[in-house]
Length: 214
Image 1 (spheres, rainbow, N blue to C red):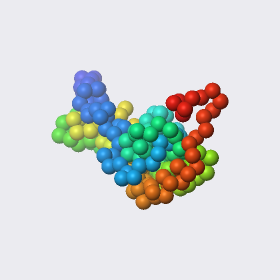
Image 2: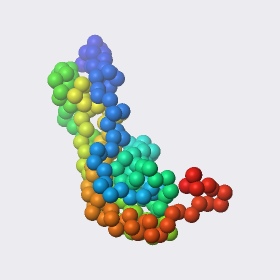
Image 3: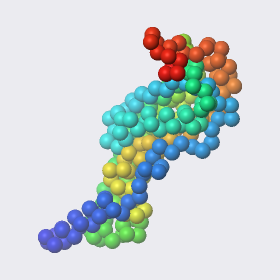
Image 4: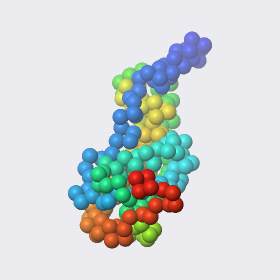
């Protein structure tokens, strides 16, 4: 390949990465629109990223940000400031892969012209399992609920995402799908969970901590 052809290919690659891809800002942490009919009292949340800590896609804080929005928008009473227990998300397994080397070879051979019409350069795929535990104010587990999710995100001009964003979006979308499987399980158990959480009482504040900061 001569120098001018290599230069053209480099320009096309740069253009696809910097200017021709969709933004993840509006979709990355968007929770599902359907919440519990009988919401739980306010809960402290915790997240264990598990194997996602080793992912090249999502940032360490991404699972917490998604789960925080899921809990506040869909699972607990937003008007309740007194916390009656805990909700913990744990990612128990996760496999992330960057695939489509054949697509890259095809794109390079055709000077990336097909990418202008939606053919991806490559794609990122994440498959994971997660569980959510609900604990009362004494730390006793009231229920454990599990779900799984698989997500595939294309790297493409105009019809996909950049290489930087695609892996991150694949991880978080797979986690969102797992939470979507867990939410109906919480719905079925919400009456019992709410009664048990209220019966155990609110979380005791730490020494020097006021009720408003709990």
